[in-house]
Image (cartoon, rainbow, N blue to C red; front, side):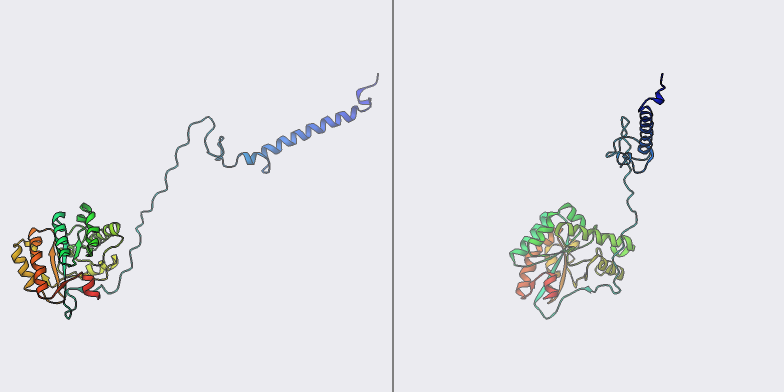
Length: 286
């Protein structure tokens, strides 16, 4: 009887089987360890040492992964605006050779009194300048647009109307900048003018801080009506008309009944003297 090794084709069949086993083993090793194998594509996007969905990063059959903490926000303050070497000038009056004056109002108090003053001015074809307190705008945001829609000037009289001259640099800057931000939010502008609170004149520090916020001029005045002392409408009227002259900038307040009562007499007296009440912008720039 002849052995299988001696049968025709037996040797060939055994060689084919052995070669097939070697090829299969080599393919298995290549899929599990070769960096060029198909497993590299399947693992794309997986976290090292984890199995699961490559797109979402979830564990197959396991709990949801913990949310990644949001990146910490920078606590480094934004750089301050560059300081100007020379603070902007302070203006207390306009040109004396023109028949114009400016009635400027501290913007605060009951809105009904403010509306009364604005309406009376408009009946006399007069234009005012309102230096608004930021907390007043917070309470009555519609007054910002009301002032501008009447053709009046709107400016900044600090956020809380505290004694700005007694504040340190940081606190004083905040008082100016916060009110400016409120004005910009309501009107798109920080306003043309800044007047320091609880002070007739701005200190050099306050003038410099106002310049950093964006105000070229700090606004003072040469006529004080003293209406904030509530002396009565007749006294307020006399205080203005006895002192005013061409180019004057007059200090008044929206939040006092005596001021609203005095305004018709003030405007009539100005007209008799051929003085026209205009905004500070018109007084100083035209």
